[in-house]
Amino acid sequence: MIQTVAWVVSLIFMLLIAAVFGFVALKSKEKQDYEPIKKKWYKARTFYGVTLAVLMLVMTIYTLRELPYNQPVYSAGNDPTIVDVEAIQFGWKMSETEFKVGEPIEFHVTSTDVTHGFGIYDSELNLIAQTQAMPEYTNKVYITFDKPGTYEVLCLEYCGLAHHLMIGKIEVTE
Image 1 (cartoon, rainbow, N blue to C red):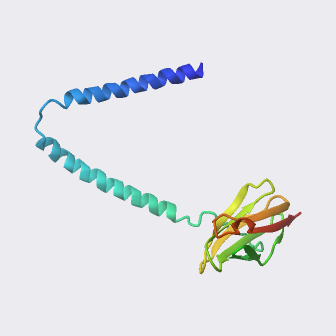
Image 2 (image 1 turned 180 degrees about the vertical axis):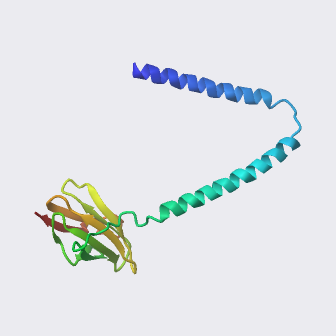
Image 3 (image 1 turned 90 degrees about the vertical axis):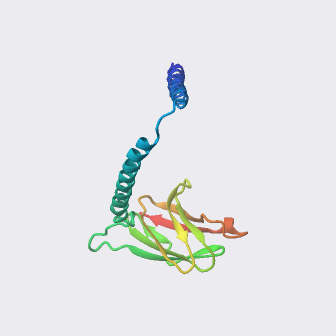
């Protein structure tokens, strides 16, 4: 039933589009003076162009003021655990790897050699957090683990022949 309705609706839209194309093709053979139309739409084009530019600028400013989007606001006395992470071909150096459920953690991720991808996966290999690990730059990832277990840190950016061996472990307990 649904397939029949979708087919009929699609056919109707295709016929409407074909009719519009046919109408435009028939009307295009008529000769008209182009100058009045050109003057009118050059004014409109300027108005629409300026309006679009202003609208895009306002939207850009409005959305960028919230960056970084994932940065949490910590309550007094609930400061995050800062974990320094350094990616090296082909492993991870982490200042801490054991955490408690509900503990806010702030990973400071960098690299000593090439660009790596820092991805944290749960036990079912669902990606729960990620950022780039780049030389001479530190990215931050904010996470609070809500389930105990063993989490894996995998490299998401091909970094060389032993890329597939770049696995780290994080233990989260109750």
